[in-house]
Length: 105
Image (cartoon, rainbow, N blue to C red; front, side, top):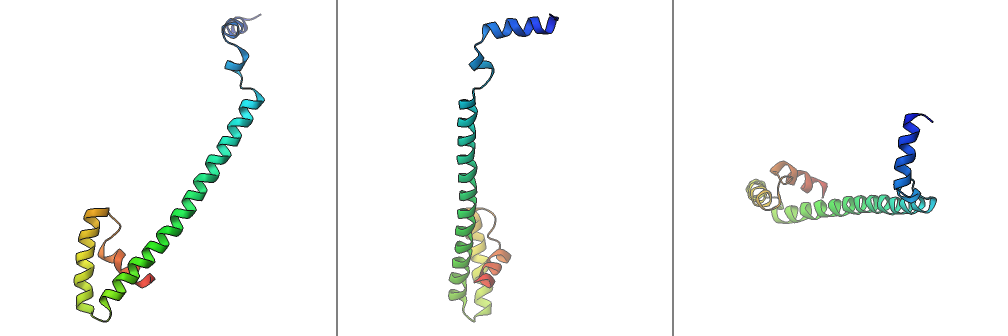
């Protein structure tokens, strides 16, 4: 026996096979959990995307209903909303983004 095999056998005698090599049941359990997590992650992403599209559409509708045909008021409203929404919810609510949401509606 070479020196590496002797070290390996000494280490193996300290541990059980279950600690060194996962059983087929362990591997299958891992794969099942991995599949559940991957499918759930995809479902969450898909659901989130759908909800965000609906949200942006609704924001666009609210802005459109408030502004109507009053262009000057629309500029003031977008500026006001951009400042307030960005302060409270973070980036993503610039005047440009809000205009895009209105156009999306």
